[in-house]
Image 1 (spheres, rainbow, N blue to C red):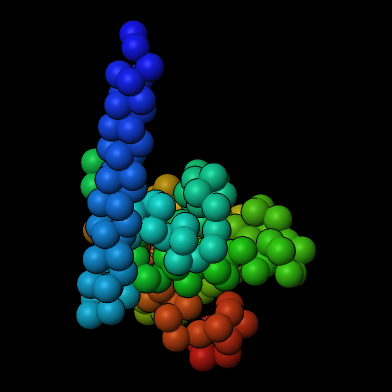
Image 2: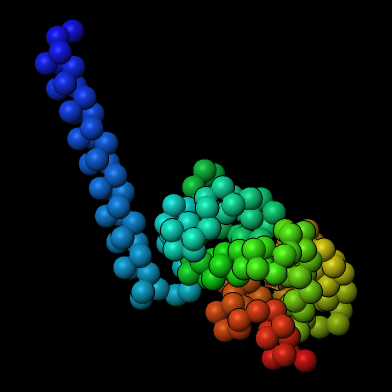
Length: 178
Ligand code: SF4
């Protein structure tokens, strides 16, 4: 292959690469712009966008999903979408890890302390039939057997999962309840 043809091939490959980055950038920016008029729980951000917005690396976000700290919207089996609430949650989780010295198990346990039954006003009978009421290590949205109040509820829409929209941390949330 002549040198000239090699140069042309490299030139075209480079152009194609730059073009694909540009297209992805425009899509990401449109997502961010559109988000200003959206509900806090609307799933609009891709993994790469939410990583930029929260400052949390993609690999860490995947780990938080695996450990149940973040509940992404599943568009299909391989594609996750995230909301503004998830941005808040990621920043909060990152702060607990880097500034407060907690590990992931500790963060899960702290989220398990949120008295979801008081927020959702579950009856005494309902709460006793719900795993979330009894577990001290798993957040309520990870409960295997949920009470009647939560059975068909999308946790991403729930005030428990979204508490950071109005409160700065779990202690502030508890003060509104107790
Ligand atoms: S709907 Fe989900 S997040 Fe809300 S209290 Fe029930 S289990 Fe928890």
